[in-house]
Image (cartoon, rainbow, N blue to C red; front, side, top):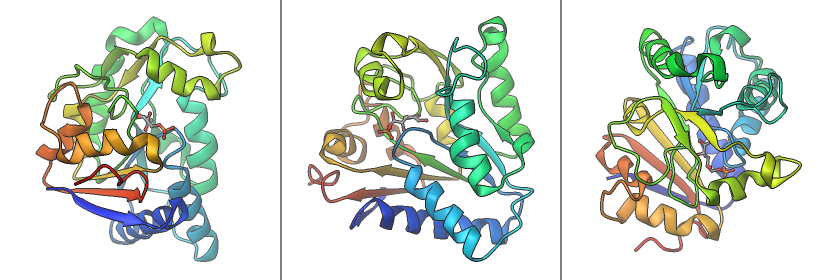
Length: 243
Ligand code: F6R
């Protein structure tokens, strides 16, 4: 059963998660962080940056693995998750760029990119804490409904709902890629601690389905119910459909 923590607002969630990540890095200077992109984890990264600014910590050995990447964006595109992770995580936190990995969405090498990513995570010893957001479709990473609970890093097709949701990051909705490469639900499940964050009413149904609904591939978020160590951090609106 996931531990559900209802917080006042996004900033409070950010501080809570940042404190536990800071403590992890103090204990384990080469900790492996699982990094989500999108809007949800931003307060976590901001609170961590503030914590490091207030009380510096050696993070040079910290390692990171992003959840996913778009397939086929031109190299260096500002909304590629490689660029987003650099801008929102690596630079503000002062991480060592070579230690932070993002799945490779280049078309030329896409057939082997999933396996290479799985091997890189295994060689790093696995993810200590995986930060997760959830999509309105219930996706974790970009594991859209229908994804197998055992799935590994692979190419997926984004649903129209997810492309609409992510259109806010692009000049035009048509610019949102159709495909992505994402850690699978099985990959995510191997992280030692899952921290799922969600804010706002728009996430309430997905959170209720993930935490309390039947376990089903139609609600990928429900895969968290199989995991022994899950913390769900939500505001009151995102918690509003929990029983
Ligand atoms: C991001 C990711 C997605 C997002 C989800 C929520 O790496 O894998 O699962 O966490 O789409 O997105 P936001 O946070 O923008 O609402």
